[in-house]
Amino acid sequence: MIRINITSVFVDDQAKALAFYTDKLGFIKKTDEPAGEARWLTVVSPVDPDGVELLLEPDGHPAAGPFKKALAADGIPFTQFAVDDVHAEVERLKSLGVEFTQDATDLGPVVTAVFDDTCGNLIQLAALNQA
Amino acid sequence: MDANPELFKAIGDGTRRTILDELADKDGQTLFEICGRLTVKHGLGSSRQAVSQHLEVLEKAGLVHTRRQGRYKFHHLDTSPLRSIVERWPIDREEPNP
Image 1 (cartoon, each protein chain N blue to C red):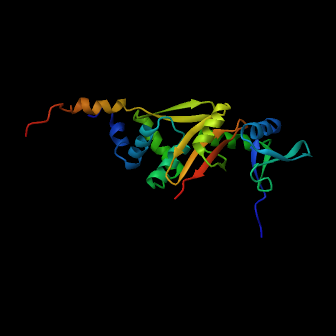
Image 2: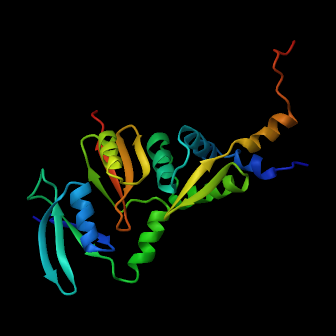
Image 3: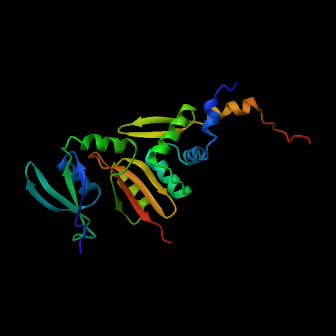
């Protein structure tokens, strides 16, 4: 069966991205191989080290910049990560200096928040409320 | 003549009134957050483009102001234009005698 093994975010600087995604968000580095002018650089969640990898992909293509800018201006997150408790995670990340465009918001079936990954993207945090 | 016909046009639409409700609930929202609240809390399936146009109408009426902060754009509620309504048709503080 086909399955998802990697998903990616376009980052403006791979070293900066690795620092943010590991030090602040708490992912761990999985793969770091030279690939042309860049690196094949992935991180995984410590609770699922053999799960889906997140590729920190350079955003050098000229179309990537305007695309990312337009999404950020409207507050649209590029992707979503799951946490157990959005409110607690927002507090934890804010204490580390992470900037949010949307605080923890209870929308009924789901609680979400949106933060800036410092690499040009907004990312959504989400937790499903127990039915 | 109405001094501010845009005001009455702006609040004459249900979706726009809901947008104002949500900004009253929490001031300073991105387009994305407003769209999410309309969809999830109110079951309104307006497209992002449609919501963006509603916000333009509200902005023209002076009920919403936008603020750029870094790379993001936030929308803020301003209820002060509504004052013209109660100035035009004053609200009696006392219970009216029948």
